[in-house]
Image: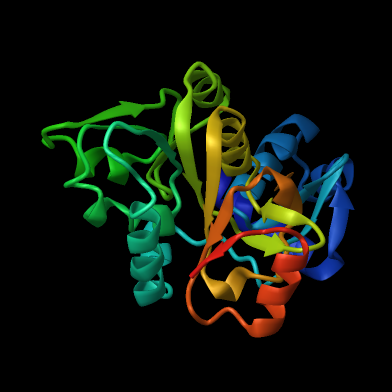
Length: 252
């Protein structure tokens, strides 16, 4: 039985039972626990389920996995607006981290005239944008290529990023709330963002207002670690006040 067939069966099982441990799934599918553990991790990385200690549970419908091409089209005008504001924070001579988020990618169109500039990224689309640019150098993290997200992930990519220092980090997030801070549905993406935050003087989170007040299952940064939130004009007055009370600077 190939991975794609196992994938469908695992998701059908979790759809009925909400959560199960590895051995229960292995017994039902008559497959080794080692194979099931590997499959569960792959499915968790795709955001199709939530990995738990010893097993897995059904992912929340509001956080489905979205491939890079799909993410680009979601709230496109908001992303463009946020990208332009974020790019205005970059100065000639800066070294910046850019993660693989589609909102972060929206900065690219507004960075081309800011030179000299050094970009450190795990995003293949970001690297491609500046391949022939004069005055802008790109340092691409090495590691495993994630086809659907068009990014480099894995322990080697994290180790690579941690050897550098940047003036500013620009990162995306799946969830952003006053209670839990920044959260993600992918451990691989969360680890990349955490590495960038730890090695930058300033951290800017690029997040459209639809994600504010929502949480995913994996918390990876507190609000105290942020320099500012860059978002759109649709952020409500109540949300703005809540963030202000937590000393979060909002740029919108």
